[in-house]
Length: 219
Image 1 (spheres, one colour):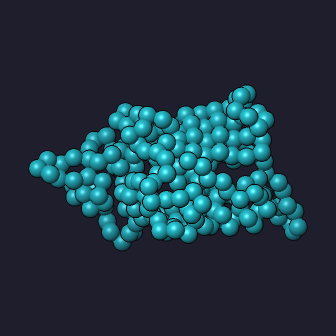
Image 2 (cartoon, rainbow, N blue to C red):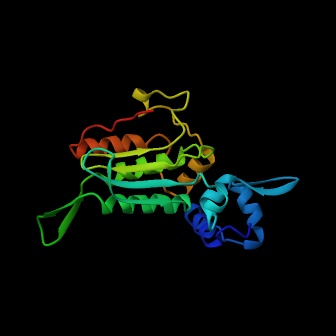
Image 3 (cartoon, rainbow, N blue to C red):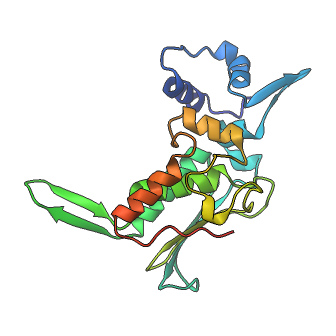
């Protein structure tokens, strides 16, 4: 438990319910209430607690990686820049989005005294795709989630494959299901992701409004 980042846990609880004060003496009970720890004779921390709150998650879960690559052109050959992240899931999400912003274009729209920056891709769609890749990753697989940026597209993937109940042509607007429900529930409470089933729909609508080709899914 000493390897957990207490300020992160306090921040999570404050966003979940700011009226409840944090008491470190009750930390074990709090973690059990969050379903990231359990007491079965002995107290033990679940993998979700490490991914969300550990000071150094990679020390315990080496599979917690996301690889970011910017390629020159439209094929995966000439690498311009790259990073490998292995921080907490929230840090991985934010750093991934920062990397995408760094390596995609931003247009300026000036119609009043203030200028408006318009990114090449809608933020809501990118955020949803990155969050989905991280939440639904198979954390038993040694392979990393990946964000590959090309001149004409962004490909975001993770190991794990499609869940048995899902079909590629029926992902949007279907009954929500998660490979890692504890992580998905924690992200919703942290106000990181959308309510169940609404994120992909919003991403698809945002992409359409941008005039971009539809999001393509593969497995």
